[in-house]
Length: 194
Image (cartoon, rainbow, N blue to C red):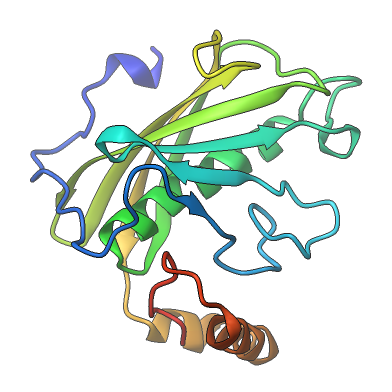
């Protein structure tokens, strides 16, 4: 049985509390970290996804599939597609709730191949919260905002303290993140940097 046949969220949740300083619809989001594999612009071979906030606080990300992203000849690697969804889902949770969170569980449902040279339009909603748990879901449309759905995903994120990142992260990378946040004058950045 496909995961899509099971209820989502799997437990009773509260509606997500969109933070008062969350970016507003129409805002184009900058990478949260320039070396992030998903959205960073300084990551060779990365996904370089672009993201904006749409109406009703839907987060829309785009992923241009290149030859560097292929698995089977001419097709996007399934693991990289899962990575793209993890990035888009995590961006929605972080930007809309303004709390640091990590992926606890990610489920993907691959419905059709995603060819090299195509663009995946990923639409994300934060579905609900329960304590530290945040549930979100996404659909990936092939080559157009309303194109056929090629991939669906849903995820459980867990809100964590900043100590999670300082205890487990690389100190040089954390310092670079702090420096880049100080230089940035971007309204959508938020103060979670360790």
